[in-house]
Every structure is written in structure tokens, then in C-alpha cells.
Length: 152
Image 1 (cartoon, rainbow, N blue to C red):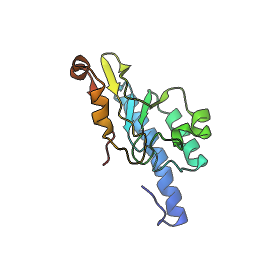
Image 2: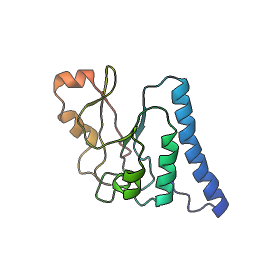
Image 3: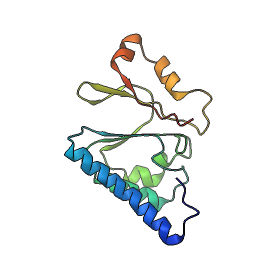
Image 4: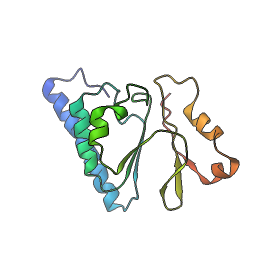
């Protein structure tokens, strides 16, 4: 959610609340004995996020005690200008934070595979979920949960 219409002080409080929410989700994940966290689409409001925001986001994610999987959405697609490919993100990303960059199934936890459907552009010509499903064999489809970010 963009916040350009907020006053300067309100913008900072809004931003801080977002970083606090990441830490709160991490605390809940720990309390609930979660094996990982999955953010399906639009972790960032755009690919033109300033470096300070990216750095503060990664700082907050560093405090999350479980693996974190980020799936690009329509606001932060995995194109050439992707925030996930920025030098700030790449250099400061904690080792337990992973960007799902393709639809290949991967094991996120014992007995659980994730098939991501990341947005590769702001306006894809095909539904990323349908494309991910086409690539799976029938046996894989019956044993795999498809995580998607289709904000249409």
C-alpha cells in the first residue's frame, strides 16, 4: 500500500508498523512451532523501493527464527528491475530468506513441497499458476500444494 497521501510523521509510523508486523509474525511462527513462513506476493509495494526500506525489511526478516520464502507478485515481479535482484537485497539477505524464482517443486519441510508461481512481469501474458501446473506430472499434482500469488 502506498502512503504518499500521509503526512511525513504518519508515513514513518506506517512504515515502522510494517517492520514491527514482520517481527510479530516471526514471534508467532516461533510460538506456534511453524517450520517456515511463506509470503505469497507483494512483499514490496513496487520494485522501486528505496534502499533504506529494503535494508530495514531484511533487518526485520533477520529476526524471524524460521526459513522465510518470498514469492514475487504483480507489484514486485522478478523482472530485470526486481527489488529481489537489487544489490541491497542480494548483499543483505539473511541466509534463511529465500526468493522463489521458478515453478520447480522444492521441499520446504518434511513431507511438504512448494511449487511457486512467481510473477516474472507486471502484466504476464499467461496465468503463472496455470503455467506452474502444466509443468507438473499427474503424480506431482496430487502430492504438491500449489502456492500462488495471483492478485489479478
